[in-house]
Image 1 (cartoon, rainbow, N blue to C red):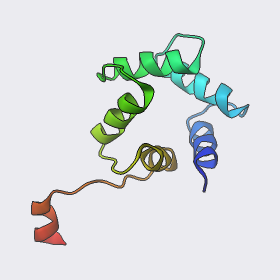
Image 2 (cartoon, helix red, strand yellow; image 1 turned 90 degrees about the horizontal axis):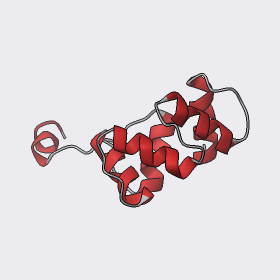
Image 3 (cartoon, rainbow, N blue to C red; image 1 turned 45 degrees about the vertical axis):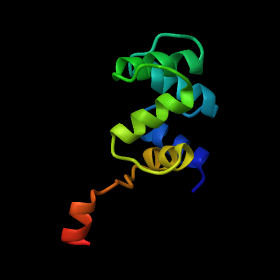
Length: 99
């Protein structure tokens, strides 16, 4: 599925009422503690509250996703996050022991 399809499904499963994707994203961010009126400002508040100092959106979201165990580029990690899958990075020790 596309990133947008995965986002829509994620928000619906999280209890966000179907609407435009931007409205659903804003509603999810607000349901998770953000209070701003724009998506960009809400992401800044959300990521900061999660312990990730906000620089740029891409840098901050990348660190947040990596902190949850996702790997790859930002779009790949976001798609995995919204799809509910984690493509986790394993250490060389783990890979050599179990791979």
